[in-house]
Image 1 (cartoon, helix red, strand yellow):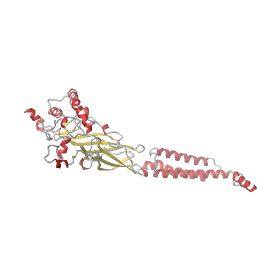
Image 2 (cartoon, one colour):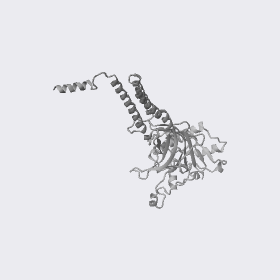
Image 3 (cartoon, one colour):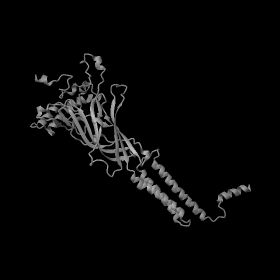
Image 4 (cartoon, helix red, strand yellow):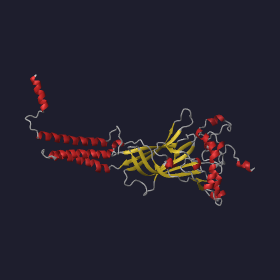
Length: 414
């Protein structure tokens, strides 16, 4: 009788937290090879490692709860049928009306995603990379992690170790493979923390760290008075929408850090606006049931333009005025030419310093227009100074150049 009670009926998922992964069907092909490995390796060697490195405390209810939940738990596979049954889908052979069951689309596990933005650390426009310090939150439901608190001394929540969330023998429980699609650094670089599991099967996982997306910046043409925007794509890398669907946590999907300890102080960029959107990419022709949902975060941040006014624009105006001072110096003063050349070289040097912050592209920014006009003006002043000095020291009887006079004379002789 005890053996019959321990064997759950197929199709009933709310009482199957110890369900074997070998009984799961319709799992992604990428996991079909891993199921045998998880049965032979992760549930034997890994269980021995857990018992030797982190033995359960049999004298506490939390230790007994962890032992019972993980006694037959597969951290690699997930019972997708439990999610599909919630949407009304039934397994083949269990429905009295298979035509109705086939018309019901299987919807993946909802995984709530939320990002708490703390500060913009850097924005590298030349490399198209932004570095943002965030708290990354995930929340999902695992039917295998449910229990009755009355059976464990009123314990309503327990913590598990998952490492970086890559699964395998590093994790005690299954975690969704939510990933940053346009990434410079993977989300696995976030700080490893312990997810919180409540007795109803809800799993909440929060990790602090750096979010480094590769951005297609927009608005750079108005530099340094620009307001840049970057789109961040977050979704599952392995599982399609048939198995896993990222959703917005608390309807918005983002929050801001606590006042007083977050934000930008003495920083070049400041976060001004965030908008979210759940975008669903169409399925591939060979898998019409599997679309690919993703969460799009559009982050807008403004640049501190005052340093560029003080350090560049005003400097260019001063250099232009200094170059005009060449007109006030007498032609026989040798510093007249030197003053114009110094103004031109200082203008070019200042332009090179600011240009290091911009990528080498075909588009022309407002900074480029101002810089080009400033250098042209100083170059014209320098050219005019050279002409004045030339004519001042000219001792010829005629202002006509000798080569032109020679050509005219040669033409008259013929």
